Every structure is written in C-alpha cells, then in structure tokens.
Amino acid sequence: MFKSRLFMNLKGISSAFVPRFIFQKNLDKIFNEILKYKDFELEHIATRVNYYNKIKSHFSIENNKVNKIGKLPFKNTSYAYDAYEISKYFKDSFL
Image (cartoon, rainbow, N blue to C red):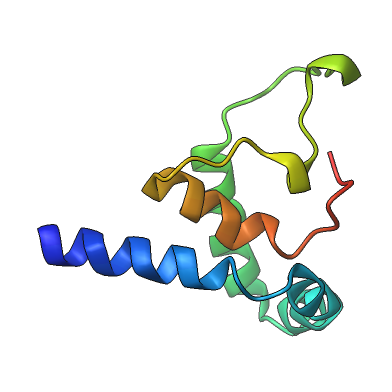
C-alpha cells in the first residue's frame, strides 16, 4: 500500500510541473471527443453523474467565500492531486 500511495503522490506532484495552459488548450478537443460518443455511452455517463450528484435544488455561491480554481488551497494529499487532475483543464479564474 505504501508503494502505491508513494507512486500516486509522485505522479500528482510531477503533473503540477506541467504548465496549466497546455492542458487548458486541449479542453475543446476533449469536449469535441465527448460529442462523438454514442447515445448509450452518453446515457451511461449521465447515469453516473446523477448517481454522484444528488443536488436537486438551486443554490447560490457567495463570491467572497469561493476560491478560484488556480488558487485552491492544495495540500499534499491524494485528494488535492485528484482535484488537480480535473481543475488543470480550466482557467485559473474559473470559479
């Protein structure tokens, strides 16, 4: 278990050295690839999203209590590296 955690942390740390604009440049390409999926694949994705996202009512976010993606308080945890795997594709100013 220690080896897998060490490998995961090293992978997360090394990905932080790649400039974010490289990933951000590829975001449109990723979205265009998703649009090529077949209907049953999109249905499966929607099912998974609905399973994990249980929010059913409208909510608002107070701007003074929100961190921008580029300013997330990343700590040396695997959760931070998981969040970075997604957030690196979006501009730093994205809320």
